[in-house]
Image (cartoon, rainbow, N blue to C red; front, side):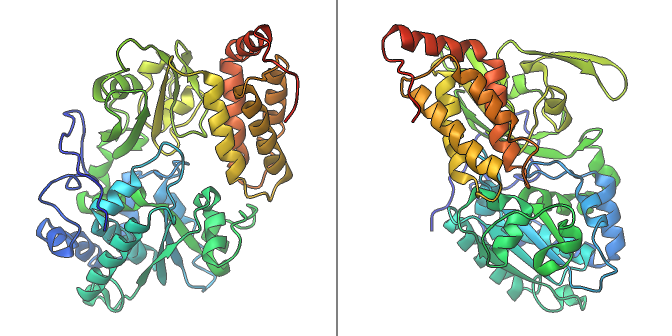
Amino acid sequence: MIVAPKRTEIHPKERRMILKHADDPNYDTSIDCYMRHGGYEVLKKALAMKPEEVQDHVMKAGIRGRGGAGFPAGMKWKFLDRKSGKPIYLICNADESEPGTFKDRQIMHKDPHQLVEGMMIAAWATNTAKAFIYIREEMPHGALILEQAIEEARAKGFVGDNIGGSGYSCDLIVHRGAAAYICGEETGLIESLEGKRAYPRIKPPYFPAALGLYMCPTIVNNVETLCHVKHAVDMGGDEYAKLGTPNNSGTRIWSLSGHVQRPGYYELENGKHTYGELIYDIGGGLKPGRSLLAVIPGGSSSKVWRAGDRFKGKNRDGSEYDWGIEDVPLNFDGPAAAGSMSGSGAVIVVDDSVDIVDVLANINAFYAHESCGQCTPCREGSLWMKKITSRMAAGQARVEDVDLLASIGDQIAGRTICAHGEACAWPTQSFVAKFRDKFIERAQRQAASGTGETRLI
């Protein structure tokens, strides 16, 4: 079995809670090791509480989903339809697939019992009948590690029948997905789990909290989110909420990639640091002789920032902000205030060694491949954006392509069943808006060199 390599150097600015033991060379994935470090004690503590008390801790903690949307986990639990009398299901979304994101796999590969414990606490709090971990097929070793961890936990009485002698029973099953990006969307995931093609459902009426798996009330939470549940119950909701900053509590794991000297995953207190600190201090800055071209702040589907951008507005308290990219707080609200999103916490740094047209062509190729095809604007639009940027990258750019790309993007966003429409449109819209001069310059350069044929692929 392949085990993810340990990162032995922890940056002084990190505040490790979820990854506290993950990179300890003396720590392994066995339940014996986990229990030597206090594992499953919080589950025992939770089982001694009423489910409503556990929910209250999660609400007070203010845990926001770490998968992308940032929706409060406790609020999502509150929305569960408990009057229907149908069984309640809990699903862990381990379909980590946003380009640039590699944080959840660190947890699953290095500390799987933390996820199992967090899930069983969440299951107790929501009276879940059965729980699932939906993991993408590209992470087969993670699935094996999780299956082994669940068997160990079942043998110790932490999963399955009569958990911890409480009389509460809940089984936990690992389900491998079919390696499609759309299965990260919660209703597409549910369709896939039911054995069907992963076409996302229309909301309303198909909100999972009411009509989820098998048309029963269902909670879908991300891997990192469910791990935070354990710590909120352990510390108490009020104490947990003191970590980070208001409305952005706790810690968060950021995946840093691209043209920096120390790419990797870093767990930081929410809002206590900035993108500048992550890129230049923690990440070691750009490579020698290079200058910043762009930053993609929250996974490839987020809107790009151009070097030199400034963002102005008012904070919640009425004070004004005037940020450069380096000043944007690393939390949920900072990137949103700067016109983008923190998404899955994947920060991609682009320096001047690459052409921005090639970057967009790469992104568009991905989203065209991953469109499920259910909605016409997404199915057709993502493919045309891919065709156009691929042609531009191949030396046949036209000046009019800039407006054509923007027009296609404008006709996708907001016109699809799920957020994949925005995921494929936002990069094109933002790249064209921020780098219009670069796109035109490339087309003019190719035309001048005689390679700029006006031909559609």
